[in-house]
Amino acid sequence: MIIKICRMSQTSPVSKVVYYGCKEKRDDNQGGIRMKRKVVSILAAGVVAAGMLAGCGSASNTAATSKESTSTAATEATAAADTSAAESQENSQADSQADEAGSTGGGKLVGVAMPTKDLQRWNQDGTNMEAQLKKAGYEVDIQYANNDVATQVSQVENMISNGCEVLVIASIDGESLGTPLGQAKEAGIPVISYDRLLMNSDAVSYYATFDNYKVGTKQGEYIEEKLDLKNADGPFNLEIFTGDPGDNNANFFYNGAMDVLKPYIDSGKLVVPSGQIDFATVATANWSTETAQNRMDTIISGNYADGANKLDAVLCSNDSTALGVENALEAAGMAEWPIITGQDCDIANVKNLIAGKQSMSVFKDTRELANQAVKMVDAIMQGKEAEVNDTKSYDNGTGVIPTFLCDPIVTTMDNYKELLIDSGYYSEDDLK
Image (cartoon, rainbow, N blue to C red; front, side):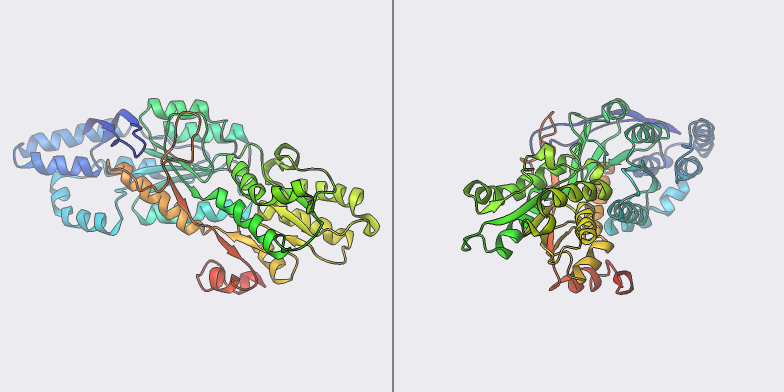
């Protein structure tokens, strides 16, 4: 049976009402189950059976599967349309228990768009997201776009046409998905921006991320502390590497760190021998390790060759850029390792941390972030307002997006075992 459902969100914490629109949905969801319970005592069994058969016939022609999709959700959703009113009554207690336990998916299809598999971080995000959504009872269509914007646009469009009811998107370029986001809004499909903020679109309902400004602040404060910048005379030599200019988070990382370090640069206590300081100059396309390494090679040959200067610290916004810097320093045979910051606690970088090549990394537990995104999906599916803890900071150009910020943690030799191994994030063998 096909029913029309119009959904509108509750007024958000910033008084922003997001209209989800009207769309056709099969009555195998919770709302349909409740409706069937109400009408089953009124309608004759023959009428119910006829309605169910009609619903099945209609549903069978609507499912489509993306050729790149890893999900068989459309087929399973079609089969779910055969659920009878009697079965719904029989399962009502189980449904209630699933709600209380957080398993509220009911087989609905959620589209998850990730930027790439080239970076360990996104593999972990995708794996955690898929596992937690499936545990909550959802079918998942998860796609990785190989850092190609056109591929991600196509993948999101396919998710929409294949009947995804919520989209969770970690964009390659926050400005690049305007067309599919417009299609999602027109189809009444809510969008959760995951980790990277989707810009200039009013289709975005919520944003789940880490406190990215705090990530940068912690990196800057670490350099400040280790060089004792508040008390030492200096000068100390610093180089700066941040992330992809199309990733809105890169601005937060850079600004958080520079708000700590720039006063020391302005006073001359910190010196940047390469002269490369502004965001556009120190940005690294696609967060590429190779790009960072090539740039660091050039910086070393032009400013630190033959001991011309001592390199005291390198501000790296994440681990992939830090790894490029470390590769360049090792190739140059630097006698003494500078302070090097990072973020994500990638395996290669944790190994370098243990070996004394990297000083710190900011741990962002992707299990926690995935859990918050799943909670947002649940809230949307139940017509509720999702939990958020920031309603002021993240304006995507159309207004402030209600946001949940997870907390980043500084990881060093002193605490990496507790944070990464004892918590089950990695095994000891992973880091050998």
